[in-house]
Length: 302
Image (cartoon, rainbow, N blue to C red):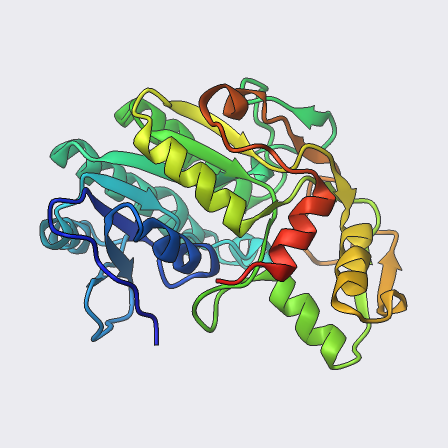
């Protein structure tokens, strides 16, 4: 059961859309110390504070906003399975683009502060280092839908903060979230080998530190436009998985190097390092390095 203590009604109201996911569930717990939190998800929950919302249906979004009456909104809901997005393009467009736009319209209508999460997949990974102002060049349909959402939200709601993420590590507060760390840990525990790319480099962030950045960006209404969040350095996915195995006490030899892309999968950027200079200008939370990210992700308690 997912329970948190609501602050008194005079606390600002935060609506987290996508709160049943890995990041959303952790952000809901962290945010409850500062906001009266309302959790939005497609499936009905009988617990207090949950609001049913289908972001692809404008009427559902309007009804959810009427119920939550938010001053702040974090929009996390997305179809983030890159290969599925490539196969089911209409669905990905409905969720990642039209859904985000439906939420942005309601934020504009009620005057709510919006934080929208995007992705490093707006880049193709050939430049190896990316700033917020670099021209986007998505390789896959997931990146394309998120880029279109970025641009539409920027035009409709210039007061919004758009947060690009590469890879978030940690454990969710609810079962069923899309946590990379938990998937790796489950396979290691089962003594399964994990084929992992040596040629894809990312600068991950742990979910606890991400929530600290969410808090700062949410409360700073002058923090508008695009922000990139990630570690101060980068690692290959293979090295990252090996480091996780070592930290968890498993044999790192279970992480099997993959030196070429798997046929039939959607293309991915090879080196999507997100520069965090602009984030540091607005936030006091220190940007961790990869080793700190891994340790915090594994040892933090939700």
